[in-house]
Amino acid sequence: MTAKAAPTLIDAPPGRQGDGADLVARPLTSPVRVAILGFGQIGRTHLDALAGCPDAEVVAISSHGGAPADIPAAWHADYRALIARPDVDLVAVCTPSGHHAAHAIAALEAGKGVVVEKPLALTVADGERLVRTARERGLFLSVVSQRRTEPAIRSLHDAIAAGRLGRPVLGEALVRWSRDQPYYDSAAWRGTRAMDGGVLLNQAIHAIDLLCWLLGPVDEVSGATATLIRRMEAEDTAAATLRFASGALGAITATTAAAHGLPAEVTIVCERGVVSLHDATVSRWEVPGVPAPPAVNTPGSGGSNPAAIGSLGHRRQWRDILDAFRERRLPLVTGEDGLATLATILAIEEAGRTGRTIRPAFTTRGDA
Image 1 (cartoon, one colour):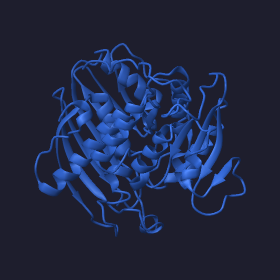
Image 2: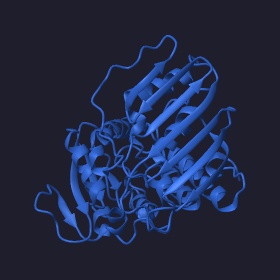
Image 3: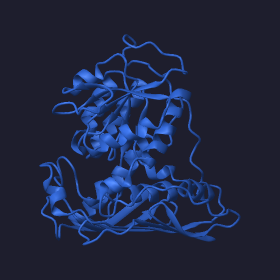
């Protein structure tokens, strides 16, 4: 497997507007001014994460309803007022998944850089349009995939890319989580195909993203999906096999119908080594010439309670985002990365519906 190309400079300096009219490039020593679009649980996670980043300033938040008393930023009930503000450099899109593409594109068209929560979009076409808009306007775009920032994952990625583990053989992801019926009933959009998706697009997406990052592009998938326990439109359970361009194989099993959630597991088997993780904790590390990363503070498990994950992983990713924005380089997780993971998941869903083997396809990598 070849190493991913080093991040390169993006065309536009921090603060560039799409039309060049409203926002003058500011000194790199100034705080990066962030607006949060959407302020449910994940929006608060971003606010908490940014509170630990002294070179970022949250200047505005947009969500329906009245402003909570503890919000240290301007409040907008209409997101269009937020993205029109001239004092915003980056917009964090934290709305329900079905709005991600439209809200992110609107922010880009207003000349703002964008950080969009996973998934990038709910269709490949919308994801491609989002990535293309950022590219054509020379604007910053990153997708939240905070597990890539975990020290053990970074060490494993570097070891695979450097060839220390030999040829990749197998990647496994197990996500056996519990999301009870009140979770899905808490909002009308939860569990719907049009606005949310199921276990693959919401809970298993991080583990699937790691397989894509560690083992490279996915050539084809097969799979099965089912809604077995929860009253929801999308799937609560899925199983899939993957074939990577490298020849390695992958297996994914995921559910939110477990009675009690377990830590998510990711195992990578290569020619000369094996690594297994339970959430962010290393349970097995056999990498020739590379000692196991030291134990560090890790996020809590989201197996039974999404709030238990906390903001540590988001803070680490925001650290990379802020540095990348200032340095005018690509972030650790690009829009194209988010699109590749999205295309893989949607291919699994299509395989589950049709019983066929599906090749993930998206035009930004030259498939069509």
